[in-house]
Length: 314
Image (tube, rainbow, N blue to C red; front, side, top):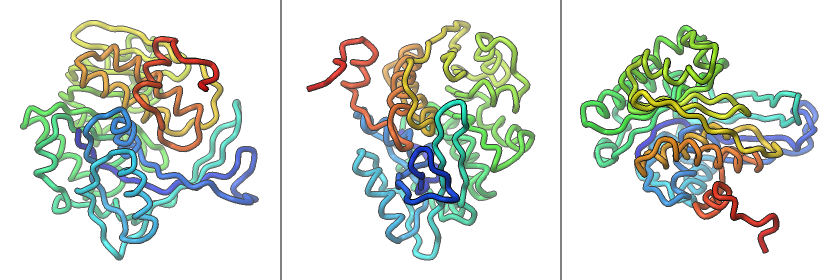
């Protein structure tokens, strides 16, 4: 699999503290596509991630973390003069919201251009995974994502798109206008029920939203997630539902990326419904641990799905 997107350094304060009076920060490597790549690599899949990170300690931390997970970072550009995007997080228990402040303007990843793409690496992939975050970063990123989507279709590669709308980056109208051509005729599109409503006026019964999303964009497969209510999938006229796995939430960020990795893992095995089930399991692991990535093995994922895991593993 091949994916492209921005990685960031995440700085989160201890739960219950505020950014304004934070005594310390926990540091994690983050970024939607990087999270998906790392999770799939931990499951044993072959994954290449391309981006730009600065040639400094922060950039090297990103590369080290992703390579430790098993991700191929050989196509990552590493300029010396650019900066690393960061974001700051306040974690609060429900019903209080998690608060996020981005500091990503003019990041190295935002300067990524078509000339930075390692196209032979791209052409060796069977799946190309993109998200709606990356084209919001800059005009050049938008151009790269569009070209990758076009080449994936022309090369009969499986094109996967996670809508991933970010209100802090652009308006719903801007996002819909840019992301719609990406997901048109995609092999897989994944979207939250909120994003489907805000960007494409697809609302009402979530059980019907996946089929409607697939129909509007002529996508082969569509998945619509709805938090604790689970996810609905649609493929070739058939719709199914997978319940969420109940979990005590520690950290909400990254659960969608873990879910996305599970869906892709199932598709690699030729089974969308199984992928959605795996996505639910991986999302549970992400919700129950700190940081953006689901640090999990295939064995642990499968034991959660089949109920064979022990309450205390010792």
